[in-house]
Amino acid sequence: MSDLRVELLYTLDCPHWEHVRADLHRVLSEGTIETPIQLVLVGGEDDAEFLDFVGSPSVRLNGVDVAPPPPGTRHNTGCRLYVQPDGSLSGRIPESLLREAIRSHRRGRLEEFQREESRKVAAAALEAAEDERAGAGGDAANRAGDAHHEEETHT
Image 1 (cartoon, rainbow, N blue to C red):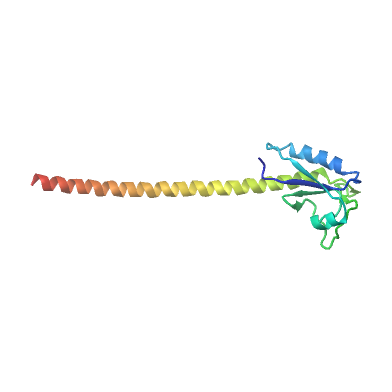
Image 2: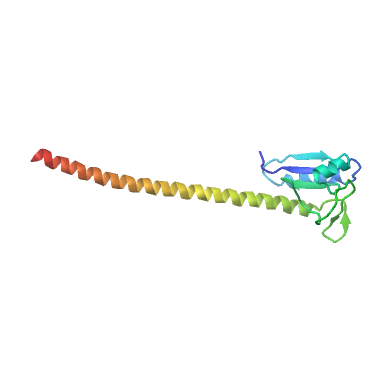
């Protein structure tokens, strides 16, 4: 199960959403964990406002737009345009933008996982060292007590 939630928000009359879905499938298949795409049909202005939708198609990873709109962008159900690598505008989200957004998420998760594993290893090493010290100290005390006991019984 993936910790990545992918949403493709679109309107029925959007000519680009199916192309973006295919691009998303292609980019997501580059990973080792299957990630489903949740399709979210935006039916009208009320849906657009409720979903904070700024045009079709839109892709969100864990609720965050892969191409955040400028501040003050109003909710709407119209076509959304994206700057392409060559500087032109198109209704398709550049595949390179999708890929980088997903990679960034995966890198962030990997770094978080690595930090957590490092904490676990450090805690286990510390616990083992404390156990060793307690065991060595306890053994010395036990040996001293045994020696004292032997002296008492031989005298």
